[in-house]
Image 1 (tube, rainbow, N blue to C red):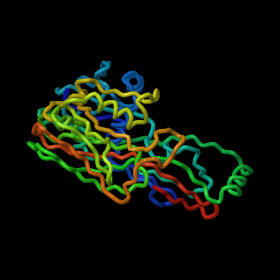
Image 2: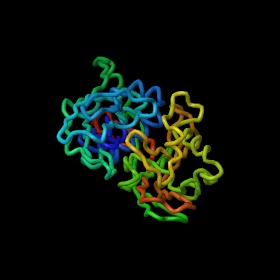
Image 3: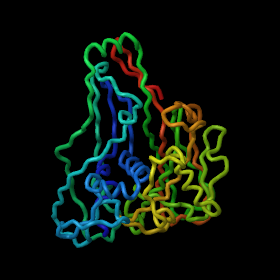
Image 4: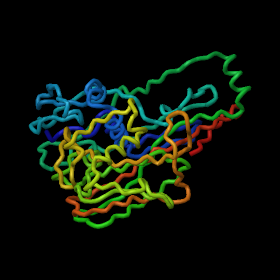
Length: 367
């Protein structure tokens, strides 16, 4: 099953999401498809992905385009058999919640105080949405999106409530959060200590993740949608921000591999958070650098750390570490040479505040 759409098909075609308020850009998420796929695998359990497969696009199809029921280990990507006929067309209908600064807002956004809000979606190339393996005998040559809709709930409180809000709030501040991505490359055959530097300036970073995508056309079917253990079970991971190390002791893939998974839970909020599930099986989690993936069996070794001083969801804000005065360095000790070149993507979850002036209807983002 080599041919098809990688990642979470509902998000895979969208390379970038940009949000404009009053024609001013307040959010830019590059590699949006990779970030959304990561969040889907970290927020949804297997049962939740199975129940939403029709909307997210997880599917196994035969060469004749006939759908098969995927099992619980095939809830990744849209995969067809390698015997798919050239020129064959597939039509599917997808829908899913949108990760953005708007959906991450703690309170309702007062549209009556804003002139307009615009979402801009930039599509990825055909080559990036499909399998990377050269063993496939057919490829996707084109795709198109039609009947595209953004659905939101709008509550009309009435003119009297709106006047009261303006009188009591000269400046209205709404807490939210969003995501940043940065990319560095690591060569094939690399061993030793890799110091990967990322420039990202934010007042409060809640958590940080490393997605270690593959590039080999014989190993990595999903490219940046894969995430390998680039130490191949023989090294450790740590982040350096300013004078601080996260975590304080490097997490070893030799001695404390399972603790990396618990730290990943903490990066999503708390290891006791009942609202956070994961859909990562042992084979996907243990994928070394030379592991051969498929669309329905990606590598999912994601390194994540919680960088907050206090993890109290919805009760505390701007408790994360500041990166405004220093870059972020990913320190990876690699004991076994990498089996392929890797794209190391840093994903940051940062706090932000939308400050809206009630009189001028201007919006300023504090982040």
